[in-house]
Length: 172
Image 1 (tube, rainbow, N blue to C red):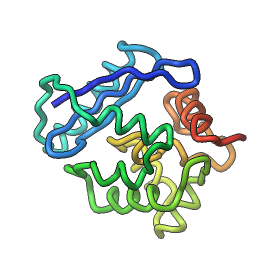
Image 2 (image 1 turned 60 degrees about the horizontal axis):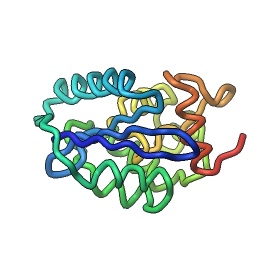
Image 3 (image 1 turned 180 degrees about the vertical axis):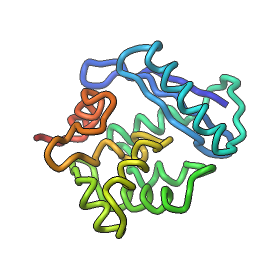
Image 4 (image 1 turned 90 degrees about the horizontal axis):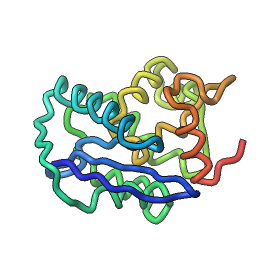
């Protein structure tokens, strides 16, 4: 199923769409309206299909977009949101990275790819790959993982990452 909802935060509209069945299968969001959202949704669907995740894209109202918004605003924790994820199609490595990130990097904090890699005894490149493939943005806070020299490195939309961090109370 697919549920999309629009919210206002810090004077901006954020559209959150969630693909779900028994739990959340994927999340996309946009601060730039429907056109960008549709591109993100297409990319997510393609990735989930390649991973063998069975999807129904029939539009149906659900609690999930609001749940994601509540994670963003801090009304519920990332850990609570994480419990709603299906984790279908993820590798064991991705589950380990996402679980660690949710438990250890809290609202208003950032961590470098290298520090996450050190904690998980892997490479910064592997962490970057896991962040790039994250089908659960906001709930799995990949926006809190930053480059050592350039916090916006490897981010397709740096203004999105900055906005999410500012909503969470991060200051540079």
